[in-house]
Amino acid sequence: MARDYGRVYSSCPMNGRETRHNPLGDEARDGESDFGFRRVPETDKAPLVRAVFDSVAGRYDLMNDLMSGGIHRWWKAEMVASLNPRPGQRLLDVAGGTGDIACRALPRLMPDKGGQVIVCDATHQMLETGRSRALDDGILAGIEWLCGDAERLPVADRCCDLYTIAFGLRNVTRIERALAEARRVLKPGGRFLCLEFTPAVTPLLQPLYDLYSFQVLPLLGQIITGDRDAYTYLVESIRRFPAQSALSESIAAAGLDRVKFRNLTGGVAALHSAWRL
Image: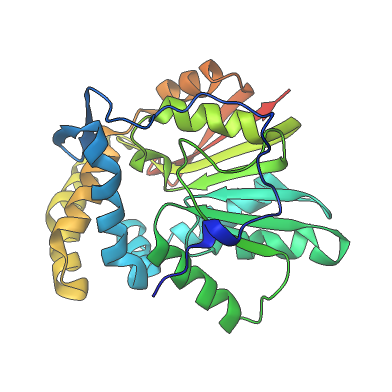
């Protein structure tokens, strides 16, 4: 059984004096959200997304290999290199369930000098997979596992030096609320990085990219994992995600500064960077 990681989390707790707007509230919200190409009630999207990742958690790296041709490993290395974590800093890795970014960054944070990674994910099964992998790799110190929603992070204001989210922002219900939460938890001078697939690539690659995305990838998902629907959703969610310039505007609107992005591999993915100043 998956652990309720949120109940044991204590290194960066909120206190009673800290307040923040709860974008979801205690009652069902009106309105709809995209779930792939479907429109669903906003209250339904998060459970649907969790079901997708419960299904693929054990083969999440394989999923990314299929979606990127294995290049996601280089993209993640580029993300950590751009982040340039320093000894003693605290990194919050959101939607980071399997711990790929966290485990890449942890040696540079140097836990013996106070460095720490907090991995936050909305899916227990993803966290269970990531924690097991970390233990298998002998990673015992400097990393914590937290079950939480990117739109209402259960951590204190201004408690993190670094915030990362890789291949996760397109799965949240309200992107603007997740970005506002990123700003809230970052210290002044803190760094924000988002790695995400993009809805369109260079014109030369677009026909081949569409063929692979909509025809080949769901079939591979069915053959290898037995879950065609999960891969269909993931492809559709990419097409519904904002283009690079529009996402940059949303990041700036959330109050983050010095926003820029860099396309990777012909624009198949992009790395967005910003700061809380």
